[in-house]
View 1 (tube, rainbow, N blue to C red):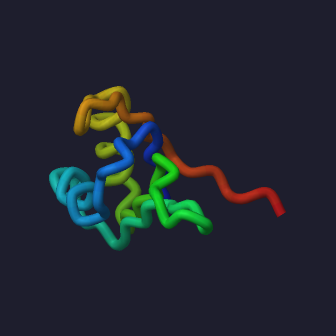
View 2: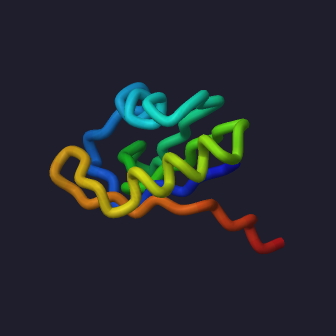
Length: 82
């Protein structure tokens, strides 16, 4: 399951975000989206979890929770429009 994580603190690093999701199951990858020009975080990320039940548990457990002073928005990522 590909999970969208929004409203991230700009200082969050991928390894710290992975630790949060590890509590819910296996994390395949974490990618914080960065501005191409500045290299700074855009404040959102995608987390890939191979087990859908674990992914849903992470969504249920983390959506609207506070992490590093910000209230997270966590939901299933929608595919890019082609």
